[in-house]
Amino acid sequence: MLRSKSIDNAIRSHYGDEFKGIFKSWAKDIAGGDRRADTEAALSWIRQGVSAAGLGFNVMSAILQVTGFTGSIVRVGAKWIGRGVYLAGKDLRTASKDVNEKSDFMADRARTQNRELADLRNRVQDETDIERRIKTGTYLMMMGMQRVVDVPTWLGAYEKAIVEGEHDEETAVALADQAVRDSQGSGLTSDLSAIERGGPAMKLFTVFYSYMNTVFNLGITSAMTQKSKGKLAADMLLLYVVPVILNKAIKDALTPDDDDDDWDMGKIARELISEELSYLMGNMVVAREISDIPGIFLHTNKGRSYSGPAGLRNIAELHTFSQQAAQWEFDDAFRKTAINLVGNFTGLPAAQINRTISGAKALQEGKTSNPMALLFGVQ
Image (tube, rainbow, N blue to C red; front, side):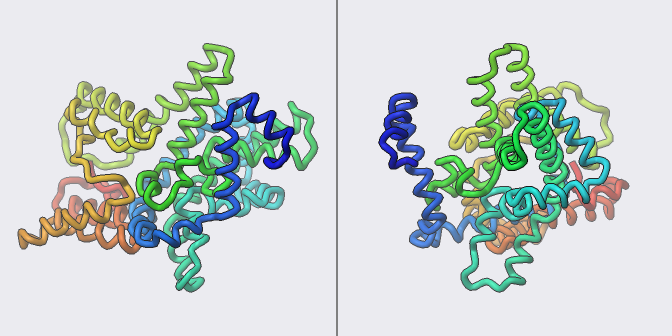
């Protein structure tokens, strides 16, 4: 289609030469896949375990997937998402099976939800089927919770296409697939933005970025197409404010606190402001690298020293491990950085392991009596 003179002229005259260039680059990346990584294997290897170390078997990250409903409401509409929740709520297993039978995209969703999962699926050299299953399995919990959002979103969009648009079955399925892609993200090359499709060096800066890029695109789309100012304001609240409040509420509710003092409303307000600013900055590559700065000025626990882009965590962790090892004190700090280092290089679920060990220690030392500490650690 891109070779057609009439289509080429239409794109260039309506959107400009740059837009045509984006399409050409997109088509080229889809055709070529991830072959460029072969020439820069070292950079690809550096980041390959970071995502699994942070998200693998991570109970808190899995639970937080439900906040993705806010994007679905913006994309599909509250009425239709409510309809999707109703249909899925009657029997999620059966509804999920029916959706998989209608949609190849949804049937393969557990392996393509984000770029890192897609990378695992495509990485076949020198790996047995068992090894691939183990690595993919580290995301099983998170994908299970994501399914709770994906299926109602798909069903709501499908019902909307059938009822409002009067589309045929094939078109309704395609529109429902697109609604899930737009609201929850996808790791397929055809769905990644140009910055996520960059070479191995660029990918070091976009680990953990897939969903935030989805939110950014939803915000831009709503701002450019929503004619009602009231609806636009509601969309912005759902995309950029409600998730921050929900994330903090869920974390505070589930994570035991080893501090018996009464709530400090001033501290809570500062933390919410810090989280909000960090969330907004996290929508954009490069800006997300300085998203901890608000926490420094607001004196919250978000203020941490910068250790480089997420894809290079293992190098920063290696420095921290060396510092701890040189002290010859095998304390909590050494334990955490040692587990993180192994996880970043191997894909071991380091974040959850450290959280569980810290929670067990807090229980043993009497800092908390809440058994949830084994899953969520302590504040």
